[in-house]
Image (spheres, rainbow, N blue to C red):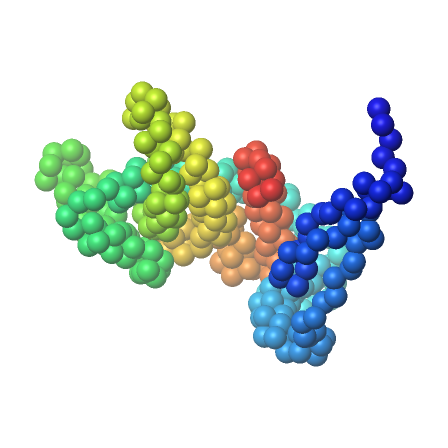
Length: 333
């Protein structure tokens, strides 16, 4: 095999095409590469700080400082009125881990998050397919669907309290008139019905955002891909399974992760629908944390802060595990 000799005439005179100054120039092969000089105006550190200052101040004030205070409170001892009495070491974490209702709360959280996110994604997929079709009144339907997302969660939850009410609720009235049930159901007081009732409200308020994320994802899929699949003889189900779902995967990933975080931290729905029930039998970790500080026999801000630290760690672990399972690195590479 012939060896390359840089000193040979052919190597010296053979030109290569490079771009310099926006125009193509010819340089002899083997010539040392010239380093480009940056001709733009450099931003001084002070100018950069002025541009980034508001964002940095917001991050420090809204994220870093509250996180610091949360960790500080978790290692502190407080009186029943909230006065800091000094350090507590790891006592608050130990008390949270040995709380008799912690197992029930974690199970409720798992059922709540998995049920709401799974049902939301499935219903939103079907709804997004419907919203991408061309039909009369499509714009009106889209506006109507976005309303629950724009409304306050407390107002929505209070509305469903009226719908679920045992004595004068609309749902019991309709089911009784239709002879589906003979006696009213205590949707918010029964151990069997309270969680399904809360899940229904969680799905109701989560669908608008998720459906519109899927609509954007479906509209981004090129029509050429569908035409090619149909020319190959693929059925509707094969097109959906082999074309739509794989190309919709980034939207599915974003919607699922955001829903997990949103549903996990959803306080107004759980608190508003479950406030009439004593104890922790139907609480999730977010309302468990609140009750530890203000509504339970403990009334311990330190324990509540320790539970808050566990909440942050738990949601980080769940999100990272989900991203790992769905091969997030491959999608973002």
